[in-house]
Length: 155
Image (cartoon, rainbow, N blue to C red; front, top):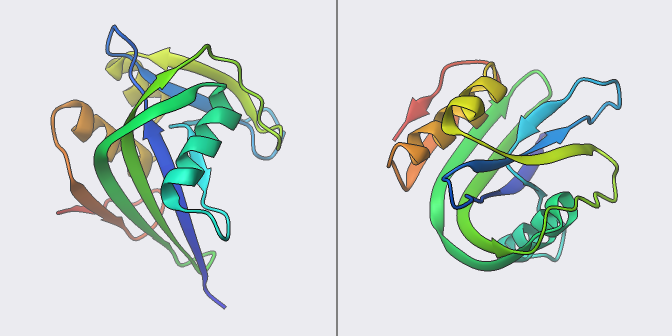
């Protein structure tokens, strides 16, 4: 049976224009992968409720306002028979960085320059390309990828 995954992510910028990324160690093997703060929308939860919850859990920050939809990504992972649909929202926040991930996967949360973002997300096109496009001024785009490491299409 095909698995459908709905994911939300927050684009949070500091006063210097740096982007908040979280370091995830999902396998708890010391292999950290960086992403925007966010995660899976739980059953019975709206997309925006999930965004607020995930940002709080992964960073300790409180979402003050969701400003706009930045972009949408679709990834077809035929290997795992999964489709992931991810929505990234630009949001404002308050509070201090203090991750309290109940799953224990988040090992770091900090702000990176766009150049550092490009380096941290290299090799993960569906995470890197849309975010770098957004930071360069592109908004409201849809990205479709046939897999996590493959080139995609931008609309």
